[in-house]
Image (cartoon, rainbow, N blue to C red; front, side, top):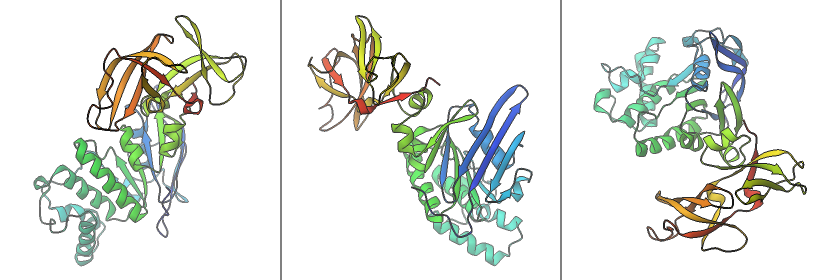
Length: 365
């Protein structure tokens, strides 16, 4: 959901941002609108331009062209310390020789705030990040999660207009990373602060963001709510990067409602979710969890054989060889009983199928 911003809070607007390093184009004429109080995640593989974009917002890099605005204020030419931003890094960047309280209050001290007022602000932040009574401790005595809370508090205490999160949880183990996702998201929502998150972790983006912008090759390929991006990908790249997807390529049949996919014994007709132009080449994406799987060879579906099975806690992932399609298909099946009760064994004959509306036509990009 979109969170209402604080009174006087502002959004972030990037227009026509372009950045090259010699002949290498890092960001291509990028537009992005982060509404006040909203958290937007830039998601993509290494080298896609997401970190460069964040650094241009922070002022560490200058765009070749385009503008960066916070509300109505153009900040593209301002130095980092005058942009009223908070930033949380992956490696925390805490001062090891300063206490937790001194780390949190450093920005306030540099701004000339009186000690009494500074101590009050620091105490508020310690309460917010649940580190009451730890102000006199040095960072080396804290866990990774606690150090990240200190880094977050240090960024928030200066009341930034926009919070920048640069792979903030990358240095944490999986269980701690998951709990910190909830903590950071909860704080961002309670404060109503505008935030931009950079991550290569699909789960992190889906869990924390109001909007996910999937990037590749310096461009935003698709932006939307996490569920929309996942359920209705517009391109092959988005479908395959944001989770697993079975991609089928074929030509639209005469009825406009089927996709003829070549198989070893001839074309196989797959139902399309909406009508298309006869003869067009199309790509159909089907998520593994949308595919039904039953034992044995039955009518009305594709007969296959289990050639791979991996148990993943609350679901099992199956690799199914389908002779009629001449390929393998991935299927996810939720566990509905004790461990192993829903597991199909290797070599077992199965039939799989999916509803037409569970497929999505995507572009080849």
